[in-house]
Every structure is written in C-alpha cells, then in structure tokens.
Length: 190
Image (cartoon, rainbow, N blue to C red; front, side, top):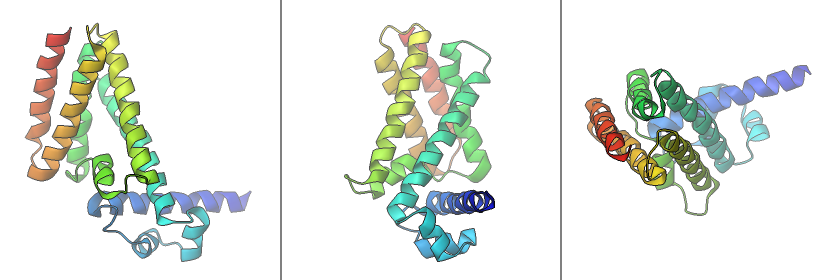
C-alpha cells in the first residue's frame, strides 16, 4: 500500500513538472531529462510511469483537458444565469488563466501544431476539442439556439482565437473582445 502512495505521488510530481515545462516551452522544446530534473525523480521512476515521452505528453494533455474543461465549466456556472449567460461567462476562464500565469496560448493548439498527425498527442487534442464542442453545443441547445451546432462552432472559434491572439499579442483585452463578440453572436442565435 505504501508503494502505491509513493507511485501516485511521484506520478503527480512528474505530471506537474511536465505540465509547466510543456506549457511554457512547447512539446518539442522539452526533453525528458528536463522533466526528470524539474520533478526531482529518478529516470527509472519516470520511465516506470511513462515508457515514452509520447506517453508522458498524452498523459499531460489528458490531465490538461480535465482541468481546462473544469475551469471553463466553473466560469460558466459562476454567472448564475441561464445557458446563454454561461456561454458568455465561460470566457472568464480565459482571463483567469492569463492572470494566473500569462498567455502561453492553448496547450491543445500548440500540441496539434507540434505533434505528428498520427500521434497520440494529436488524438488527445482532437478528443478535447470534440468534448468542448459537445458541451458548447448542449449549452447552445439549452439556451434555445435555432442552430446549436453552428453557435457552438462559432463560440469555439472565439475561444481558440482569443487564446491564439493572446499568445501572439500578450494582451488580455483580446479575451474581453472575444467575450463581447460571443454576447453579440449569442443574441443573434437565440
């Protein structure tokens, strides 16, 4: 039982270090030795949890998917309003992310750009996008949108555009502008 606790704690340290390094430097900009050094684990410990860097990257992206979706949903729910207000309120998660650690862009877009088309990392990024879009579509449907799929796609583009522009310009006002555009877009669909 104690071995399982250490294993879980080591895995958490590895993933936390990898998340910070991959987010700030990209997938290709980080070597396994950097993750080992930052996490403070032995090389054998890292490889006991993740046989390859690709496995580590996929685990990082899955963990990021869960975390990011939870942040988007929490921001949406904090509006206290209905689904239409939640579609606008979710943009607060982007501002909060910027305020927490600056804008390094969307880890999924970054991974999709760096990963091979047939890689597990790319597959996880596609799964994340589909999961996010399914949630946005359901909110759009609940809000009474005549074409919930179209509204969800457009909101998704605003999210991705704000993250990409935020990375490029290092200016948090892009999120405010995306949020304003979402408000107008939603009004036109409901």
